[in-house]
Image (cartoon, rainbow, N blue to C red):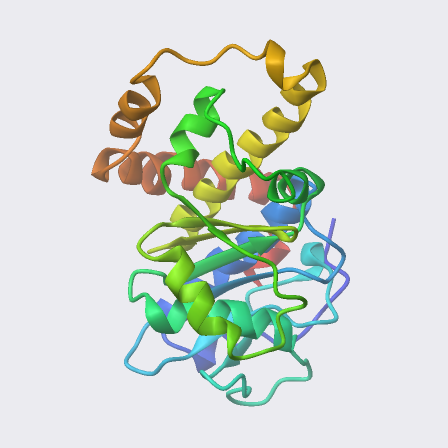
Amino acid sequence: MATAIQMPSVQSEVSDEEWNARVDLAAAYRLVALYGWDDLIFTHLSVRVPGPEHHFLINPYNLMFEEITASSLVKIDVNGNAIGNTPYVTNPAGFTIHSAIHMAREDAKAVIHLHTPYGQAVSAMDFGLLPHTQTAMIAQHDVAYHDYEGIATDLDERERLVADIGTKNAMILRNHGTLTVGDTVADAFLRMYFLERACEAQVHMLSAGRENLNTPPQGTPEKVKDQSSGEGMGMVIRKLAWPALLRKLDRIDTSFRN
């Protein structure tokens, strides 16, 4: 199955580090589509381009996620201006959210923001993410919250986004969706995987009524936090899970690498 979008490769025009970042980000877009997390063309994944400049890669606004390739990603500066020639445009609302986090957090090299039904459902619950499943306990300790301010076109919102996420690596944008960050695309993607799975499980379990839920024993969420944090989890994500996901994509369609 080949992508419907064909454009010349930019591999010879960028550094090896940038090309690797492009391939990883294109892979993340394809995986988001594969898992059914996309929202037509209306959410965004971004990564900082390695190097001294504050440049970022983000999706073209008119492409479906399953069409995105490494070469079609748009390189922009902190003001949202395209770097170099591109036939594509980007979404100002996507830039507002992503630029805020990228500019404030040196470790937030990758940012993923989604509008899935399950993520939106939990974002509309006043109690937020509950620690009632193992997956939720893996994610919950690292989740911040940001109140809804309308479609994110107001640049003034950036300082509040930054203040709300603080040092955490995931955020539930209330009445809106989910967001994760990472030092690599792999880190951000796997954090989103756990957060989205936790949200999906929460929506299903609440169908039984909150009064019927089994609350984990006291201290268990803290124990799971310790078990799933640190460099050990990072190694599992980058050395085991992410390569496996790339192999999965390669079996389906290698065109994300173009």
